[in-house]
Picture 1 (tube, rainbow, N blue to C red):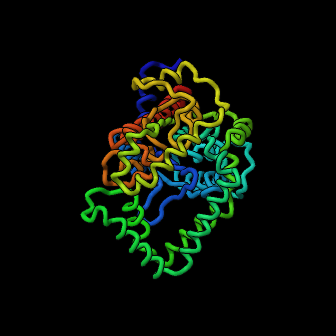
Picture 2: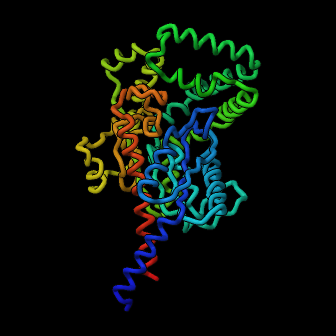
Picture 3: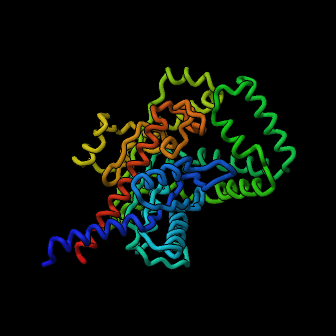
Length: 403
């Protein structure tokens, strides 16, 4: 039997080693995902929020954004995740943690399934280093929005718009840049002194104001990928996700979910949207998507007692079948323990909440007018960081006890 003093010394030693180790966090984008276009980032402020939380906990962390394919098959996207896992595992020691937003959560689940056959020649054997998986607004049981876009009308809209944008990008830098500049100035007529920022400002200033040859080619390549491969659409339907769930067992690591419920469209918010041109144009789109997201019956299991308790921690009502984040039904996002239940839309949680919160740092791409701002954003990602660190600490102490 190990003496008590020796056990305590071993625990303190393990805690010291834990703080000295570097944690590796992989951020996996979702549908239409990209890393960064110009100054426009998919995970706006998420990397900085995670780093700040780890510093507060006295831990060292590196955050890597996984390059992905916008609408390719989950199998192809998961191969990108596994390639990044292999690269990170070779670069430095330390535990690895996965965070997947939207479809990125499904990519991560498939990537860490040892029996999954993925189209990659890069070997990865360090599965024991992957300690946690957090999915954020992931459609584990599918979304009816995907069902709609698998129909001929939906596929036609995506392909037509994508081909038109590729054509415009390939016409030449000068005429396109002139058209964008004139269009932006026309939009600013309503607010010449820029008292109110919106997503148009975000898109123009961080991406479209400097359409260099390299950037045009980057955008055109991205859009060609959207037009050429839309395999992801079927796989995100409830039927497609049901098949994925049958082929991927629960991972043998600590996993949890972040869940969101957006404010349903209302006449009051439709009236509010008239004050901002972007919201005026996009609020009907949000209302349409929100309505689609509640159409089909989903095959997700009933909430467990623990999940109900976790969802009700902030005195919020339990999600109903009709609730969604504007893209994914809220109940479809619940997978394992619930870390955080946000009153937010699908993109608020990754930092795109500018308009609704009156913040000027980002554009609000989905004008849902959900009560989500900087305070909730910081709280969400601090909760995720504490979960990751807590799992790592427990694993370290367990190893110490066994030693």
